[in-house]
Length: 328
Image 1 (tube, rainbow, N blue to C red):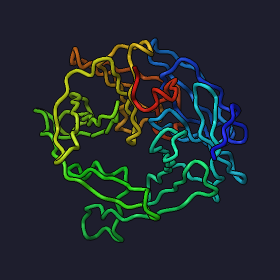
Image 2: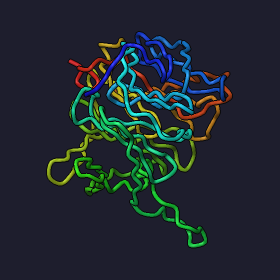
Image 3: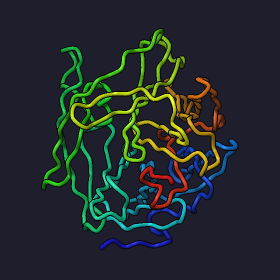
């Protein structure tokens, strides 16, 4: 049985952030750690402190809060209402390089909370109501490196973009999680581009692939292409030029959101993404690509920031009806 509360005590004291969406920057070391939330329409900054570790939010609208060691209690927190759902305590302190995903809304009996190590082939997982976290190590192959690199370096889930011809699936119904893959087609590089990054977005029961294409072998932006992935039978791609009322909010690594433009007061048929290939400590550029106009706008959200701890991530003012990409 899940337990919920409106006060996230013991796992952070973040207040609800109000009328989002916002791009959240986690910065500052030790007791100076803070989260800065940057609202996109109109662009402005607001701050929200966090007593403990705050892992990037999941596409269902919740954030995993982890209290400081030596009592690392954990909760899922809804940034709109302040409601939280109690999870098992961690047995050890988490390092910095983790991210959280949910398989469903926390109220669903089948919901699995997945905490991915972004550097090692390992993850933690539990279901709402469990008494402990399970640890699972996996092997999805080695990174292709010259023979002099030893020992071999293992792929982690976030690196599957390096294997774009495959779509990975994790099945949590068996006693031990099982991995499987399906073949899928890949689009050709647009003229003038030799580098691209792919980000996956689930929206209203549909799966989309967003390609951010760079000029030649440079960090300079060229264009954005959006495709819908059809999974029935052999997976196929179909290019999408009109998202309608939808807005895609993208962040690394592969924690992507969508929202209703009219509901949250932003222009539809746009893709927002963070562009920081040079690893700038202020988080780099926030890019806004308009599919109607095929145009790009950029801005630096927090130019004074000098201690960014992880890539920025998005938050939405979601409720249970909209957390699954079903804005009506």
